Image (cartoon, rainbow, N blue to C red):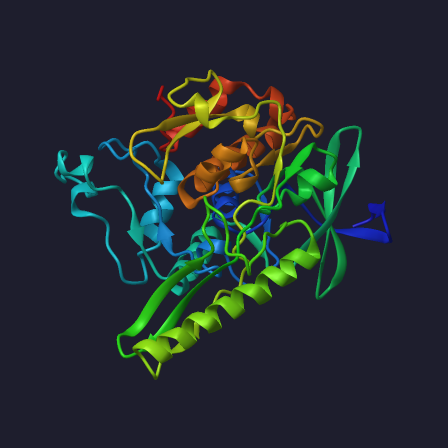
Length: 392
């Protein structure tokens, strides 16, 4: 293609799309799937060699609740589809009460969630995107944007082919760290409060066993530990090193205490940080706004930590402010730190991914800025694709 960009180097545009999604975690998969199903020519850029992010490579293999803990399902759409897809090629099952025709009363005491295995989920997610016609670019790392007058014309990435340009009409930042938002000049907020973590599987006398190692999340960390910032490369490296040391120490304790033959069978291949950098959008949702209705709601979420609370998520927490054709998805949407802990997990990440991908497809087709999209059209499209948007 003839068009080139003058960035660090002159970069030729390798391909052009309607929608470009950066990040292949659950949010990115949902965004790409939603955009493609709306007829948008869609690509997904992923730095690893498979999809799922923390939900697969990070071994955080618990699909947290789609319900409010009192028997009401609050998340559906692609998020529920991925819940079921997680079990397509591997073991596990849904609670009987949440299956079709299940006991309604039992749903009030048993949440709509499941455990799954990473490898089957990786295969199923890839299959889902390929069936939808999404172009997947593995081993491709986002580097920067080409932006003029508040519009992103393309992203610059690097892979085995070198530095390449990818043009699109609309973009979804599902990077987990607000990489596009930060690079494109959106206001962002960073946290340096990430804890040491190391989810892994050991093999020993009881077979394969999962261990969810982490420093305390809501209380003081041990004196011999530290906190980490997910947008500082030194901290990212040290977090990985310290997590593996944590695993080794745990395995040694197993060997000394009860299982001499124990060894680490599967360790995470993705950083386990929870909250790194996020968008500071036109609206920042707070945990105090429980049960509040928003005219621009794009879906609901419960609180995975406790039964009861339900939150509506406004489109304004997702749409870019300084870039007309950018939306955020997953753990990087515009929320306060307390609310961040609720929206960073799989179900709401998939929900915001579906909303961002749908909005991006509409933006690409109509040319209307993300923040100015007709809310009713967006909501009607989401409802038609299974989303629950009614008042919480």
